[in-house]
Length: 637
Image (cartoon, rainbow, N blue to C red):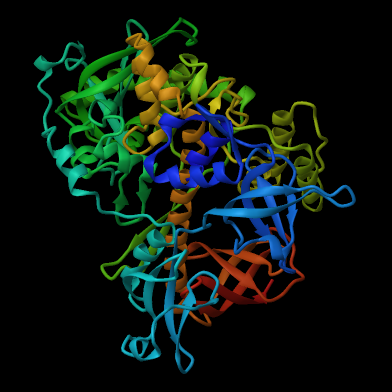
């Protein structure tokens, strides 16, 4: 919906209007909200945006154009709730602030609601996130037949039960809840699966007029649990040429085909500790598209040449075929880089170019960090037991092998961005001055007194330097990150602030990101000089990037919600347990993060008089499995 409405605000030809939006368009024409004949456009009196509502019930419309909010009186909300996407009409009044009234509710904040059954003593359905009571058209007699804590997925528009997910007491229901909250699904349509299966599971390179690189010792380097492999690398030491090979997914996923229609709705793969919910059917993502060991695979390859000072002097995009000779884990490569681990003949061949490449990427990183930022990375990784309960948590820090691959991928992404002027960029704009000033004030109690430089990157680096001396860099880094704006996808280039790049895009993960798949199609149309296809891809690109950015946030929210559910279950089994924690938010109620045997869980504190980054001991006092809220009391400071 948001994608289509974005098109409508910019102008859309009648012939391009999808069938299922024609009734909406006819109504908007009828109320004179749309102007034009061949090309239709929303009138300037009508504003598209998202609703926010304060405690008094007064609404505020945030226009998706980024202009100032418009006030909406409670009687003009027309049934819209917080987070809903609407079309509103301006209400002109010279004597008051700009106002509007909701004309059409386009999309609820959430397409679906997850609710659970509570006996109080009569059965009541409550929203699993807010605990608010939900009125459903079901008789009490029918509800009483169901067990306590039964969990349901409801249609957000009608409040009708769509699916019974399970019971809250069963840990295996967590992934179903997290997916249902954002209306995500695991299963693919039969048509999409059949389409994926039709490509088989091997590549006959004789059928393709592509450059053959199967004789080169490419390798993949991924997490040990990875089942799909987007990228492989090879370095020609003599010619100083790096080959970054990325799975050519666009060869199998046709634009507007059955797989593509599902992929554009998913946008991203979702990763749980125990499984993934892929963007593409596993028949593709874990098979013909994956750069498997000792298998010929189609790839889009950037050949990147360096000079004697390890500076990039040329980049070339090639459609090729590769054969990865080794599937490595990060851990294995780290051992090799540390001159440990057993090696065979193939390992020796690969290491003969991997060590020189590592030296180059180390140099590139040093160069990159002159204009960009680096933040402490400590990703929380969960391990679950056979019952879906939290077994242990470990922190996965970045290692040399991560850095090696990251800088190879950054080179390919930068090279791809140079090939387009309009399309799909990964944009990260600089933070607002008011947010930086607020951060500088917050840092003073820690003894970090840094001036705001004209060069914001330099300001942040000065903060990081002071924080390192105090031994609190990883926490201060998180505060700096909060100050910054969220990275997103844009049709026009606006640079990447944190990386310090003038142009940047995402090219290297087409198996798990629709943004990269779209870019592959665009780049292939450019290298083949197929202007017609290029124009077709770009026709609605501005609305597509909006949708992809939203889908990215949704995928992240699904993963975070799942982690919170596992933390809550662990906390429920550890009521009255005292744990070490650190205060990460002093707003009411203050929040601390556990830094004990289980790392990363948030605890909401009763006590208000705490300071940021204060180390405390907290007793877990109360847990709500439904909302995932963990509450605690400070027992020692």
